[in-house]
Length: 121
Image (cartoon, rainbow, N blue to C red):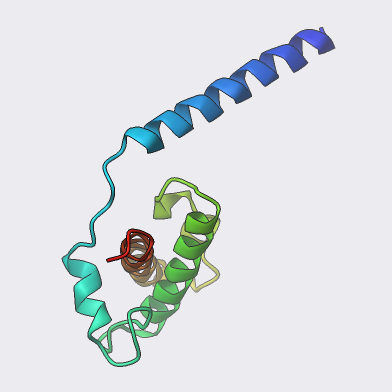
């Protein structure tokens, strides 16, 4: 029974790796969107949150940028909802939506910037 589990796990893992690589190879290269352009021109650089953000939005924005950097460096699919800090933020319960809003926006800006940088744009 243990050998069956190991063989099944190895097959599932190899299929998962093949499917992930195929999806990335077939995906069109990402182009920077209008969101990245808005933040690039702001004071302090592209990785700074907009000045109108509230405290927990700014914290989420910074964490989103860092999460995107980690995902990009590890060749993970770009999805802020795959980050633990997005689902379980260390902020007061009533500030979670502000945090998540900032996180999504920071993640998006960072991914657009990193992908554009990778493609020499």
